[in-house]
View 1 (tube, rainbow, N blue to C red):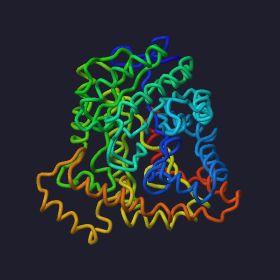
View 2 (view 1 turned 90 degrees about the vertical axis):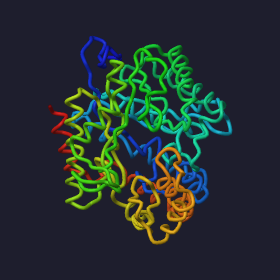
View 3 (view 1 turned 180 degrees about the vertical axis):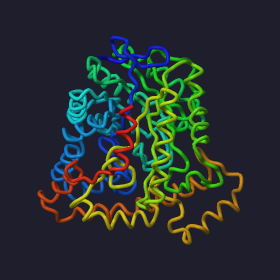
View 4 (view 1 turned 60 degrees about the vertical axis):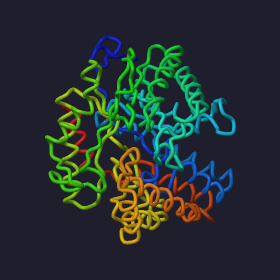
Length: 456
């Protein structure tokens, strides 16, 4: 059953074409602030919660959360929808510690092994995605970056650790037919674009020496949109694009309509998609959209437009025979197919509302929250530094990143952690179990939309 690349398609061992269509398991082995409601980045959050709970009870809560977040019921739901692939984001910290680099943590694989097995038992492939690498491969929270500097590209030490880790992962899963392949660097953000290409050359050679059979899923630079960094077309490789629609962001405008001065409709979605996947067509390699998907607001009229964005994107992908992985499966209500309810939301709901009011995580921010307070700083930057255009998206985004998503978000960490104070073991388990599927609310229009598409 091991997949391989054959021209512009993925095929099974018997040559049958396989188009991978599924979801990302965001917020699980790589936690993200908008997915489970915490502020800032994962390692900072974990450190703050550990300070409150102590080592043993910290382990109790987070191990239970990993167990409850995805189990047999979740795998069954995805299989019933017709999904045949789950992209599994992981944080390197499960497999290696900063204070003991190059030492693989065997225990860190236990949940990944469990979920790959659960999915495989139901005929669902897994793509292992390293979402957070040592030193952070991009500038944002989802690489567990507490700053705005992607140090991975600045220090060879971090790259050495990543290669060593992937050699260990490839060795572990080289004989697993339900692992579709490896996505070794999520959304690289190499500012000058000089290191990422040579690093991929090195990484591909190292992984192939251990596991020559599994497919490699390689993201382009600039958050998987720039493929000029590839100096060769590696064998048995899928070059992965990410395809978020501007109108589908939290700050997105009407659809069809204008978002921040740019028109967005179905034709624009297709034009953007074909531009982002030009490299794949030029090289005759498979087209796979590793991430895409709109943000939902709770407003019926707006969300109806967001569902139409998704419906249009899926039809475009179908027309181009493109595989895809929708972001994301489960969260606290912003994007997931299902979202948590019960004790966790009862306890942390007011905090999440405060975080939303402050626009303190990028994925849920419209960049208009607390506008009166931040407007003078935006004006200052625009007036004093009119030509400043920082990587990757310019001055307005950079200013918000530094002020909202780092400064304000980090200031919120003690408040979030303090909500764990005084809880019994049973209460901690109940918080974690709020993410179990039986406790979750299903986003039925989204589930119906996916089921209809997948049934074709």
